[in-house]
Length: 119
Image (cartoon, rainbow, N blue to C red; front, side, top):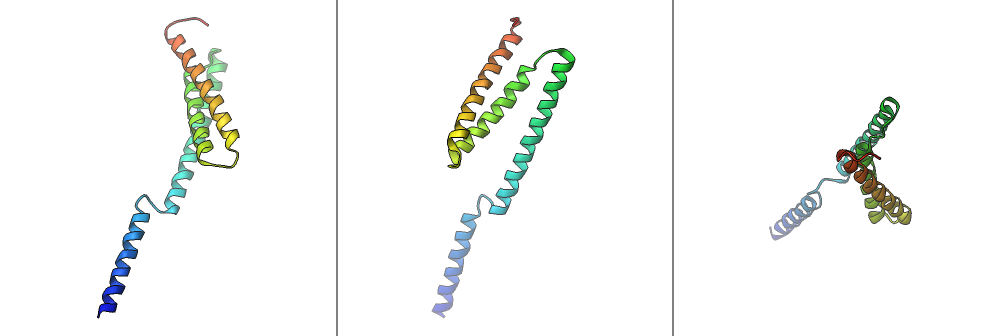
């Protein structure tokens, strides 16, 4: 009888550990979430590129607000990858820093444009 209780406890402990490990989702869910995020990011970048091209062609104006958003998104992505991934860390961190600087430049240009300062 005690053996069954010990087995039941060990099963309960195993189930408790399993629940704790899977609290934030299993690996398959995490992978699907990462793929969905990557696809959404890619579609967003393509749409932003189309908006930039159409704006430049139709209005002879570079939409710095769109460029600000795009470079900010890319800089965050590159910096996070550079921090978390060992492979090509220097490359990702360098690209992230350059894109972060570009993002600040586009932000400043946008603010100046909003204030009516002609460039």
